[in-house]
Image (cartoon, rainbow, N blue to C red):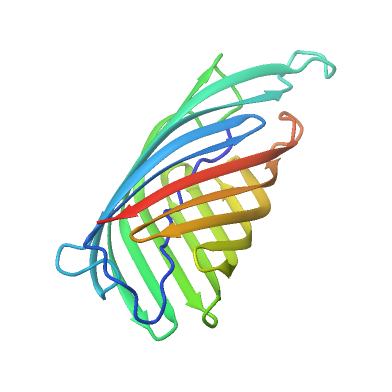
Length: 242
C-alpha cells in the first residue's frame, strides 16, 4: 500500500532555451523490492511554446502493483499474512508556467482518481477501492550557473490524502550528461515511502532519458499491524518535446 504518486519531469533549460514545439510527452517505470509502476503523461501549451510563459494542460496516468505483510487480529504475532494489490491513477490538470530569471515555476490544479485493489481483503487497511478528489501541484526549477541546477516538485490530492515531493540537484558533467542526487517522499493516509539516491540524465535535441536508483524505506502509521521494510529502488523516464 505504498503511495504511488507521479511527479512529472520538468525539463532543464538555459536562460535562452531552444524551442521544440508545444507538446511534451513522457513515459517511465519504477521498481523496488515490493513495488512496480508504469506511467505516462502529456502536457500541451495551447497558446505558446513549451518554455514560454503561459497556460498548460496536462493528463497523467499510471498502473502498478505492490505487496506487503502484516499481523491481523486473532492470529499469533509470529504469523505474517501476505497481501498483493493493483493500483491505478489518472490526473487531469490545468496550470501555468512563469519564468522569473533563473527560476521557472509551474503551478497546477485539477482532479485525480486513484484505485487500490487488495487481495485478499485487508480488514485493517483504509486505502482500498476508488477515490476521487481535487489535486494541486507545484514544480520549481532553479539554474545555479551554467552547469548546476536544483528542482523541487510537490503535489497533493484529497483522494486517500495522497501526496508526493521530490528534490533534485544536478551538475552537467559534459554537454549532454548530467549527474545528481535526489530525495523523495510519497505517502497517503496510511503510510509514507522515503527514497534517497542518485540519477544520471542524458539529453539530446528535444528529448532526454533519466535513470535513478538508491534506497527506499516504507513507514506505516499502524506499525503494530504492518511490517516496515527497506529495499533498493530504480526509476527510468523518457521524455520528448515536439
